Image (cartoon, rainbow, N blue to C red; front, side, top):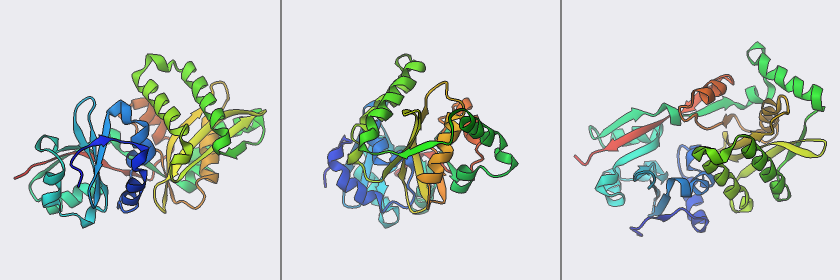
Length: 297
């Protein structure tokens, strides 16, 4: 067993995906595009043993993320101490299901605090695809405004040949929002460029786009999390196109979301404006996550 952490890399993708498929609760945080895309920003490292992929964040300070693998097949009374240093028994982004497993396996030794900003929003796919009833009246009006201005949505599924157009939209969006002046937006831009430039190296990525008069004006990139859930990694639209966000959201749910029950649209990071925007789409549930400290005794 390799005791050393190494930077998250695509060279370990086969081992990672094998363990990912066994993970009982699959959070958007723990997808390979997310881990690799944000590797430099968080200094993310990993190491593999026979049953788990251990993940460690080194920036701005060392802390463990939840491990990936079959949580129900692990002897946690030994695994935690064998796999993390004593100083690294603080964990972040721990899904509620794993917290409960730890609490049962290590009674009285697990302290947890709710981390609301990291909760991932789960929506009924049918709601986003159809915008039914009065509760989505405003969203539907935005989509109608888009149709009135630009015609019926010209939605196209993403493929390798369209990545250049996606990156052009992202570059335009970043210039408009002055990403260079925002560390978080600059890091997100780097993550998007990094992942999309290696589109074919990831298993399960899916995407859609909107075109107006031959120009891409919006894109959405997601990934199958499990049989029920599709996660959304990135969604961007060009400024000046009315209703573009509501329309790409709806079209992506209709097309890429076909066959799924839920769409996971990630967390709000305690940003009040983002939280309000996510709540207007009326989530049906959350993938809850916690900050956790595990004591030896």
